[in-house]
Image (tube, rainbow, N blue to C red; front, top):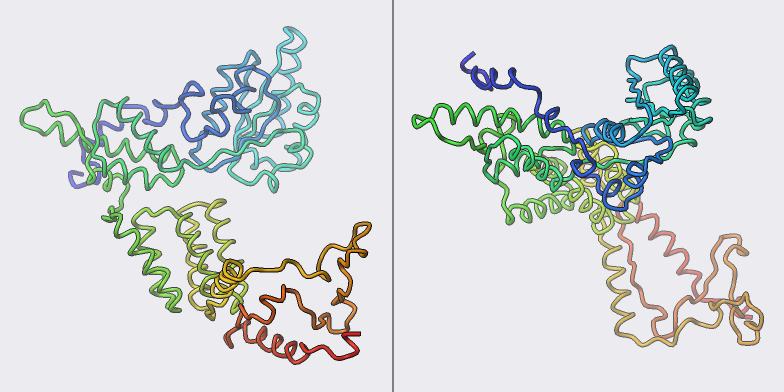
Length: 447
């Protein structure tokens, strides 16, 4: 298998040692990266763990964020007995056995018990119900771990008796920190572009990052061992990182970042879904932050589409939520759908021009303030000041609209929003025209 991806020598190196992710598994709270919002200095979870006052908790987060690791650190800090079950293989019988041992410990030694239940969402309702009495009484302190939304997957009674802590996907900064620690532990150097490539492909998963780095290190060591001098220090190159990940790193400089996002937005504005998808794929392959991409889509939905297709903003915001809840690579499907919807939607920039014109008037035209009939008339004495007098309640009219001035006289009649005749905005234009035909009050209306 000389032509195998790893090479025979690299494969042998990997097989002789425990996985890097296991060898570097954190043993203290300070060793855990990417979760400072929970276990940083003075943060709530850290305080509870270090004071050994932890009550039942649910740890929710994507794979590779340290849920199991955190449970092991808790085990090292507590004076309670620590039991572990996996909901994948355990059943009600196993739960009952844990409960029996917990009762025995408490009765004989006064020692409490923490139960770490991995993949808690895999327990069905009956299995979760079997835990409830022991959690409710305090016999068991539950530490549940799940990658699924606990509000959907954990029984409400059990969830209500637990504190929910959400672990975040590792961002590139945390991934680089993790890679740096691993390189130091392995005694290996790495080129900056190799580290950047591995970090950008971490997808929030520390375990995956370390597994990929381990393969890259094995390749670098194999190459160093072939050096005629025999004393070369292994150094992970970009080629090693690419081979470990099975992907090519796109050269993507600062100028490219701005040029590609510009082409992306202009393609969607120009109603070309294929071009939009091409530039989306370019950014994803280059490791662009999907949150940056989706933020631009949200802006575009109002800037270039607006009321021509009001659902476009909903679609863009939903894509942003999908990026947060699902993450890459699966979220690329949601991004693709959003790009197609926005590119094929009717276009209007009138929301953009409208707020621009209104801001210009606010800045440039002095105002006499809120007209008297629009001022708050609910408090005692308001009527004596003329506040609210003459205000006409639109719902009293069968049409739900009455002709009435809502602006100071200095800007009365100024038009900021001029709808197009495209998409949903055409209906808005018709409705506004019909209202404008009624905009001149009759003598009766003025009485």
